Image (cartoon, helix red, strand yellow):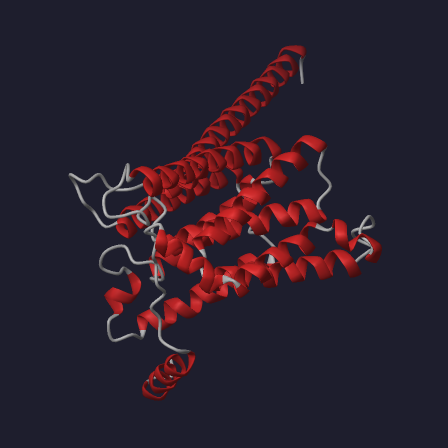
Length: 332
C-alpha cells in the first residue's frame, strides 16, 4: 500500500471516529433533554396535586380534577422517560420491594377489572375515582419514577421543595377557610386537598416522614431543625383534624420506628435504651395515644367552632359479610 492510500485510510478512520463521537454527543444531549422534560412533568404533577381544585365557575368534581392531573402527568412523564431510555438503550426497574408489591397489587386489580361485570367502570371509572386500574397504574408510574429521580440529590431537593411549598399553600388556605370562610365555598371543612379527613391523612404522612428522618437518618443541624418544625406542626394538625383511623395508624408507625431505633443498634448506633426519653418517636407515640383516647372530646370541641366531619362507614362485621358474599359469587 503506497503512502497516498495509507493517508486516505487514516483520514477516513479519523472522519468515522469524529462522526461517531459527534453522533454519541447528540444522542447524549437528546437523552438528557428528554430526561429533563420527564423530570419537569413529574415534579410539576407532584406539586400541583395538593393545590389543584376546580374554580366555582367550572364546578368540576375535585376527585376528577386531581385524578386527571395524576393520570395525564404520569403518562407524559413515563412517555418522555421511555424515549430517553430508548436513546440510552437500557431500562432499569427499581429493585425496591415496595415497588414490586405495588406491581403485584396492580396485576391483581387489573385481572379483577378485566373479569368484572362492569369492566369499563373498574378500569377507567366515571368521574375520576381513585382505585380504578388506570389510577393505580398512574400511581405505580409515579412511584417507579420517584426511585429514578430521587437518586440525584439536586432533583430530590427540587421535588421536596416544590411539594413542601405546595403543601404550605394548602395549609394556609385551609386556615383561611376555617377562620375566614375563604377561598372555597361550602363550609369550614372544604379545602383544596379534598375531604377534612384527607387533610388529616396528609398531616399524618408528614408527621411519620419527619419523625422517621429525625429518628433514623443522620442530618445536619439545619435540616434537623426543619424536620423538627415540620414534625410539630404536622402532629398538631393531625390531632386537630381528629381523624381517628389516621391517629391510630400514626401511633402504630411511631411504635414501629421506636422499636427499630431501640433494638437495631448496629444500624442506628446512637440510639440506646437509656435514650428513650430523647426519642422523637417516643413522644410522637405519647401524643397520638393521648389524641386517640381524647378523640371524642376533641370532636366536641371542634363541633363548637363549627367543624364537624362525622365518619360514616360500615362496621367490620358488615364489611366482612359483604366481602364473603362477593367471594362466594365470584372468587376472582
